Length: 88
Image 1 (cartoon, rainbow, N blue to C red):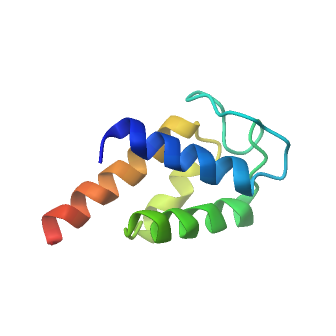
Image 2: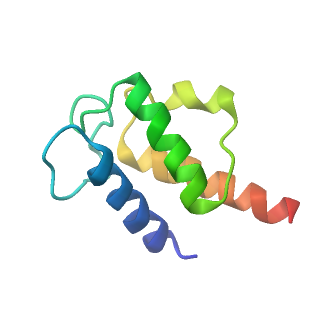
């Protein structure tokens, strides 16, 4: 799957789960303040991403996303997908 496909799918998840009314997500927008994700909502977003992409995000990586930009979420999912591909 191309990086643009990953980004588009994650953007749809972020928009659907955000408590704010947003229409699009910029790569530099922070998941917490600008996109409306508190820690519990962020955890749910990661669980949704795991289901959507068939990946597992190591629990120790979750704190990296607190205050992180959307681009970091994309990178985390892509890294998990690459690792899942290595394991297959």
